[in-house]
Length: 215
Image (cartoon, rainbow, N blue to C red; front, side, top):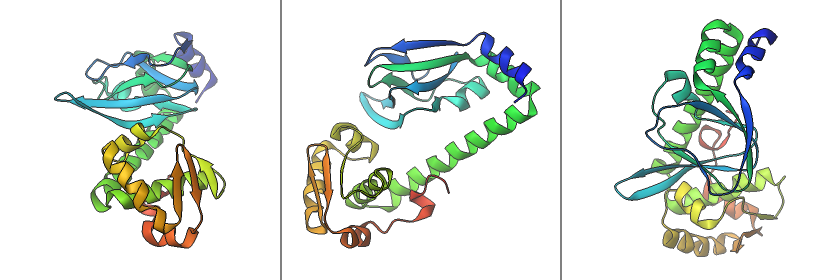
């Protein structure tokens, strides 16, 4: 974007550090700020009829919630810090004004929204087309890739949140973890050991049209 427009956009922005377990935005409220996570981790949640679920985990450098900001619409999710986190908050009105004024910024926003839309479609396909065991197997494979192919690595979130993201109960996740053992996967606490890569791949059947975040 043009440097002058960037300066104008950032004039009303500020950086703030939040402790763990602080609710940053509330589902149903109007979008006052675009949030950018520069340090820490933020959990995106949704609720209905006394039930709640983890929708996504946002890490640096990630934003939320861009669609609500651009449309001046209510948040469809709440956001809560998982650990001490540092965020940049940009007034939503300034984001919309810059979107109208700066074509390069507008194209970047559209590209980001398109990526988020495709990620949402992939997540829906993952939930609707795969069994809970297959969803867990593919999650393990993605974590392994992020760990540079290591045979032993740590889960990036606690099991309760992992179950929610995968559309499972904690009990179902526990059963799925045990069912993975014959496929060469052992999970103890947060530590994952993959001893039979081929067997895990045969079970998971990963595809770029669901599992590749860059596709």
